[in-house]
Image (cartoon, rainbow, N blue to C red; front, side, top):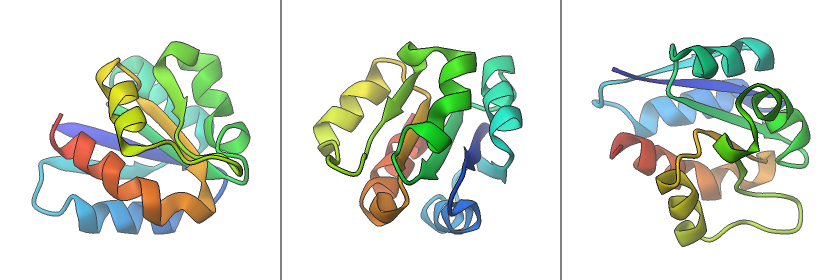
Length: 121
């Protein structure tokens, strides 16, 4: 079974609810955790993916994940000045990125693509 943990500093309940709708019927569990526990869950293999949001897409969204998993496993998919293209996000996913951060105001743009990539992994 695939496990997605939701960390970050903003919108965790909304992200969880959106993911549950997008991934309904899939064999995927979604759980909200604090940043440290979420990153540790991925590092230990208890979770497959980390998703987090904040104002910058990197700091509060991904700082703990980056510290524990390393920058080779994390990816800011949306910052205040740039939202990565679907192809760029897919490329990161295919290269082994497992922790994704974005600005909370980009949630409706990037979360459906992340959910699709996770569902098809």
